[in-house]
Amino acid sequence: MSERASWGSKLGLILATAGNAVGLGNILRFPSKAALYGGGAFMVPYFIALLLMGFPLMIIEWVIGRYAGKHGHGSMTGILGLFFNHASWARILGSIGVAIPLLICMYYIYIESWTMGFAFLSLFSQMPKPVITADAHEAVKPYVSFFKEYTKPSILAYFFLVLTIAINWFILQKGVRRGIEIIAKIGMPTIILLGIFLGLICISANNWKGFEGLKFIYNLNFSKITDPVVWVEASGQIFFTLSLGMGAIAVYASYVRPQEDVVKAGVYTVSINEFIEIIIGASIAIPAAFAMFSGIAIPELAKEGTFRLGFMTMPAVLMNLPFGWFVSFVWFMLLFLAALTSSLALIQPLIALFEDEMKWEHTKAVTVSMILVTIGAHLSAFIPNFIDELDFWAGCFMLLLFGLVEIVVFVWIFGINNFYKELTQNTTLRLPKIVVWITAIIPPIFIFLILYFWVIKDF
Ligand code: PHE
Image 1 (cartoon, protein in one colour):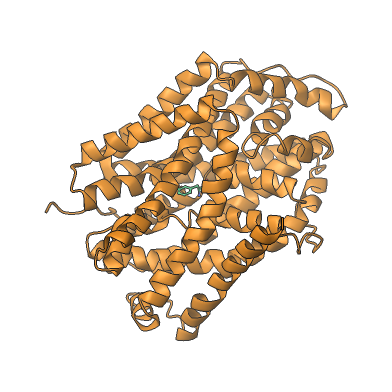
Image 2: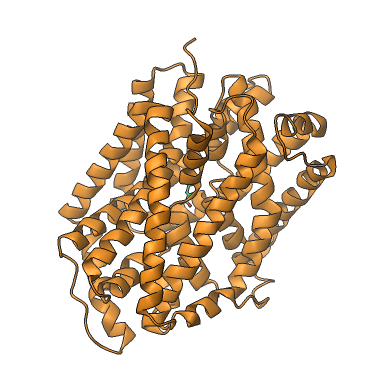
């Protein structure tokens, strides 16, 4: 057997996983969801879900990923197989797990291609000129029509889709260490720098009028606490943004060296992701849009679809700034980089399945995976509502369900003692055993209750 791939360095591993988690979920999906479900009212279940489900599951996926990697498995098919003596039912269940990131990637990569398209359209002054008006609806109108024209889809949109697919293909082809890791090492620091740059510009340009937006997000309140839809959406957002419930973290963890401190790595992943979600997603995008539109257009436009808000409001905001074309270019480049390091992570589980379980060679595994993604991207481009339906079922509902499976298998069936032994191996953060008990009990009950109330709400 040829040797399995591995990360080149600790830093590379952390940046790759941060790149995995930080993506369109942080910068586009999160503000849309927060706007749609009441700002501060959404943030309460959001933070609870982060603490009670996101954090524990992140650590679980890291620990189990390292464990599975030692046995030559990385995809959920192989990992569940490993726990059940490679019984065929377990491998089928695991393959459903591998299907989730693939389904997500089918629309994710299409949206990724919009970000590149919009970056270049900004750079070459092809975006609509800003309308000078105090009326928010009038100001945003040209950008709404422009976006709708672009995504009809147009030849231009198609060109950028093909280019995006080709870039992903090229990087994945280079492998874990020479492809994904290198892109993450370039991409993550760039994202952070560009984020700071944009933050400063937005703050100075809107004279703190964005404060209204901050109040909208951080005015935590309990008005939606009994609404199961908000709970499903808020916890779904936690799973989506942290890349949990589909084996996308576990597969990256399977490429670590056995002596790696995975508990620390998990803590880093959550911290970096939440930092960017809260800083760029909540504290730049929403306040910037609020400063300009006094909030009117935001919840309304958010109804257009989860990922679309940022392509209509943000260009309107940014193009109104001095050197708007350049600021808009920087913003969409930041989005593209964030999306790219995530789409690679969405495809890797499938590649791992082909390589580890079917023993295909790398080029064949990458090529077949990319063909599937390409077919899916076409469905997203041509079938109306495909993106939003898939985003709910694969990008929210199935994540919760599969997250539940993961906890049951990796903690209960693997055994509290075995799990604890793996957890405390090679780490300086030695958690007490009670933490494992809490993890084994609280998150599954929570997920179960959320899904239960969500299902029965219509009866
Ligand atoms: N976490 C990514 C985001 O926020 C999405 C993603 C999910 C990426 C699963 C990889 C795997 O955009």
